[in-house]
Image 1: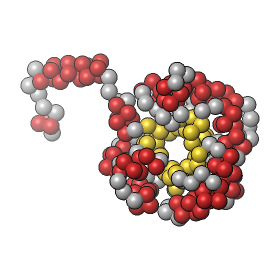
Image 2 (image 1 turned 90 degrees about the vertical axis):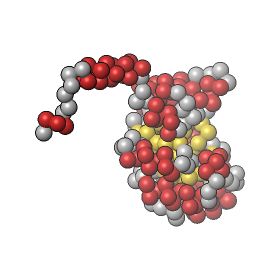
Image 3 (image 1 turned 90 degrees about the horizontal axis):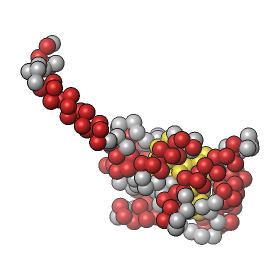
Length: 221
């Protein structure tokens, strides 16, 4: 499963990229606003750091303006993926861009039917929001499971499932078990996947026992 960083924080992206932990990045208007930077500038810088898809989201609600914004965003770099809302205008724009060979990410997906529409529109990625479904008492990962089952029924569907709104380690592990193609998550959550109290406890024991020997591997050269 591919990992995407859900952020516009360049330093965090550089760190995860250097560690080889991410294959792409997703942004949205809220993340860009939080960065306090120009959308074109920050997106261009992100695209220089990672080779994989970088989702840059349109802000318009109508097809004509979405296309105009997409034409600006796609000029930033070859790995820009145009992020579009799950609306009829968004799907129309998705179809038009897909026919041009432009990568697209249909976002704010909350049902299997919406995911099917995104796939029919030729979306490169569809983003089911697991955390936001959990917020209203539903099972977000069940939606991912259902989409995976439905997509597997049809060989002609090439749209990848990009799990979004991931907030816990369980969201990520369950998405991987289900067979999601990718997940996007905040950098802190991705880094936190390496942590476990038993790992810390075991490492502390190893270090304590090693120090008791009085040896140093470096001094043995």
